[in-house]
Image (cartoon, rainbow, N blue to C red; front, side, top):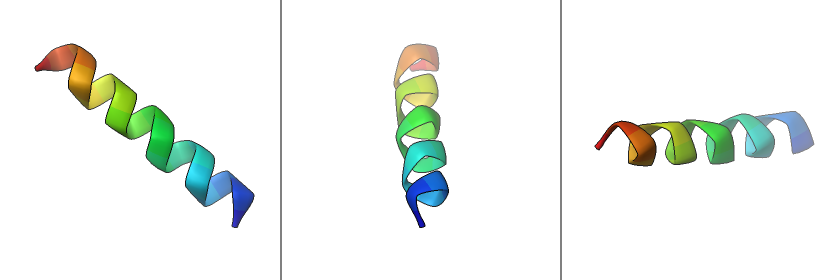
Length: 19
């Protein structure tokens, strides 16, 4: 589940960067 959490965090950071 650690990988899922990592991907989730990266996605949130990436989306925040775009917005």
